[in-house]
Length: 52
Image (cartoon, rainbow, N blue to C red; front, side, top):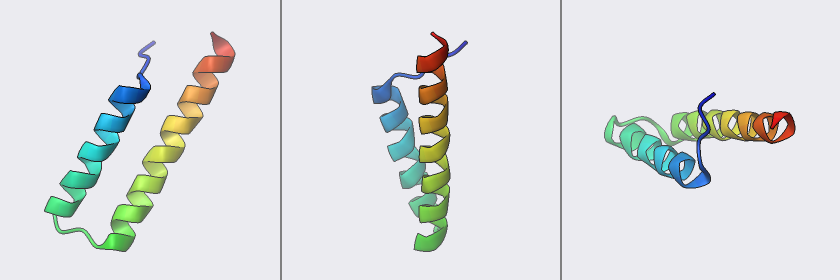
């Protein structure tokens, strides 16, 4: 299984924010997408810690 370090997750998260801004997405859309990504990262990090 692919483990994503916190540094890599942070970099990808920031890259996603930058890309959404460059695409001209509205702030509410950026917020919603960002929240979803944070929840996914949190879910899988928690799940991986429990199963390892």
